[in-house]
Image (cartoon, rainbow, N blue to C red; front, side):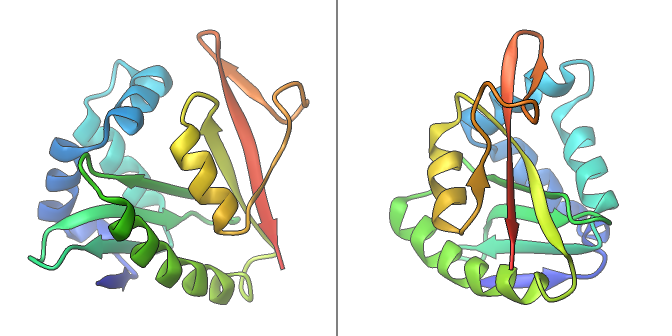
Length: 154
C-alpha cells in the first residue's frame, strides 16, 4: 500500500520503525553523510523538511519505505532491510505514477545517491531519473565517497 502525507513528521512511529529497520546500503549512506547524527534524528530531519511525504506499507501494515520531496524538488527515499524485489516493483509502480503527478508541480525533481548504492541507482533509473556521470561537476564527494546527482523533468 502507498500512502501520501502532507505532514509526515507527525508519524513518529513510522519514522522510528524505518530507522530501526533501514536497509544496509541506506544505513551506510547515512553514516557517510552525517555519522555524528543518530539515524532516527537524521531521518526525522529529512521527513520534517518534506512538503510531500509518502510511505510504502507491506501486507501486514508495516512500513518498508519512506520518502518525500522538499521545497524546490529535492527528493529522498529509503527502504527497510529485507524488502523483496516484488515489494520494490509493486511500490515503485505506484511511486512512478505519483512522481509523474508531482512533476506537474515541480519543474525538476532531483537528488543525490551514493555511488556504491547500485540498487538505489537501478530503481531510480527505472523511475525515470537520469544520473550524471561520476566525473561530472554535479557529483559531490563526502569523505572520499561520491554521491551522484540525479534528476527528472517532465
